[in-house]
Length: 302
Length: 295
Image (cartoon, rainbow over all chains, first blue to last red; front, side, top):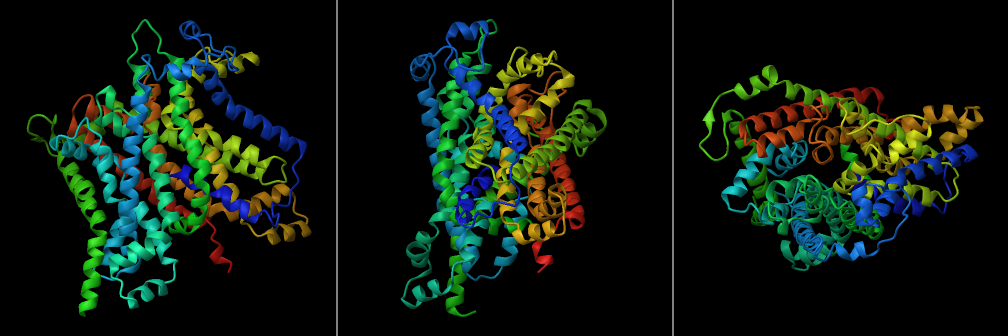
């Protein structure tokens, strides 16, 4: 979540650049030197990944990688989709699981959050305290009973345990939507009601379009969480053909024969494939994350 | 209650039902089940055998690996979280100056946090290899690098190093907060002749305490639940030197099918997180500064 939160900031910063309030201090040559050094050190692993990804099989077996790419075996990028690795299967699995999870969270969080923000009902406030309280419970507490539940349902080794719970929303997303709706003027729903719309009509026709930024933000959070999720698939999926990329890539390295080193070049192509969507989502998504104004949400931490 | 009010309440419960059902089926039910399972000896295939508090007493009095995992988890959290915050703050402060190409630097610093943890672990497996780039770099200074992931003394620093790689996440958040600090505060301090360092400690840091506190809480909770890195890089080894609570729990449950024992570990983990979160909130009154207090 922290990653997604911080993704919200650059767009916000852009909006203030007009005033040029960038602080009172000039950067000294020493600051530049430090920034260049830090950026370089942080990027070394990423350059190294590219270098390994473009290495030949001989280099992998001899374990003679260099930080800067020395050889350029571009065919590695396509080899992972052939017979060498079932990468297309991993990718497809990732897409199915993530899409299901994103859809589930977007559908359910909007409804629940709207209800908590606008509709009046006895017991609502007590229930909202429960919502907040559940944020404190580490998921490990429920991990084993949930596994037993899904095992009894016969869902182990299917995508269902990784998708279905998302259709029931989660506390953090409910909280986000509620905060967002609370800031919208309530005259909108009142006017709609006078016009004869029912509660579902108000939600469907008036609220839903206005919720777009927060729902897209929730979609981004969910995608980030499920795309890179390792523990969930590790618990529930056994067949290589059902594994998402995050698990599949690791699986390849851990099942290699003792005498033969894992195909690190192909594994690193997988790692790059795993990372690229996150970079894409970050660039496309910052606008929505900004509109949602996360600062209102994080105020709850006070 | 009027008819309209009753209808509204009905719609509330209808709209909220996904969360309510999810809460009962995926949280409340499993929590109660987890308490029960933690009081049994159960392999998940044959019927559970009631053993009372035996799992807990065995964990606390007769399981050196659990204590080691607990200590390692503390060690990891106590160093990686503050270190990440300090580095994040330091980088944010650098970027908050009038820097050319600030956007480029910010992106480069943020980039590692976009790499999914599994990929990060894969990458660090290579970076930390005995003949990997880190040891090559150390070699330039004449320092013989250790076999990071294979030596008990170096495996925890290696995992902390991996976590510090992602310090850019905190940087971006802190940088945004720094931009929100009223400029007049610095101007006034400048008039009073305060040095940049003095201004950093007397204005920037106090103004940032709410966001530092937020990062601290989130960081602590995350660090106590560290899993993927440990599981992929070391499996807790060598000799349990990098074993932490969640990988231990996972192994007990899904490798050894000791569901009762693992459930007991999960409740002890909850207890640890709860105690530390409450402690952080208690001390927060002394050092976290909220803008509303000056208004």
